[in-house]
Length: 257
Image (cartoon, rainbow, N blue to C red; front, side, top):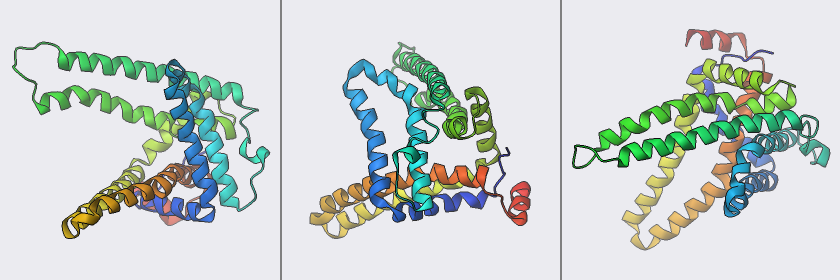
């Protein structure tokens, strides 16, 4: 198995390809993403049970990926399709979830430590914004490689029979080889969010009475369309990096980049 190195420009198309996937079956795409977030919300409302979320998240991500595959193929969803490799690889997915739980606990402890350092008495009357950013920078730096390690790990564990540790390694390598594409993808998502904010501000300036209504409408569109599309974009990235053989010129361009 090989993680292809894609050119930087490849990341620009992930969001558009994910939206095209969303257009194939909006009800299924929307219900799948809403169910994913609903599980997290229910666990959060149940207090301590929210600690189960990192453990079951890899399984939920595989179910989502199965949904995207069903939509991609244009077939009617069956239970066997949606649970493909979930039952057979359940122990490995749980182990991956336990690793993610350990990382989440570590992040929580580090966040508490950083918060304590920020709130701790100092010789200065008040910490400046620069001080806060400098304290948060180590946490942000650590979050990036953790995302890289878990980005594709659930699918690699379930669909490619990889042990959790090996899946995390392959996921990290794949994202590292395609940092440029991921940056372009992040930039695209940021542009969409900023554009939605700009439209709201523009309407508020031109038609003050319509500002709130347009804002609510944009929030609804973001929730019903953009969020499911953004979630599906990781599946598109997986397909292009692991399953699609790039054209020779694309490979060359990626190596030159």
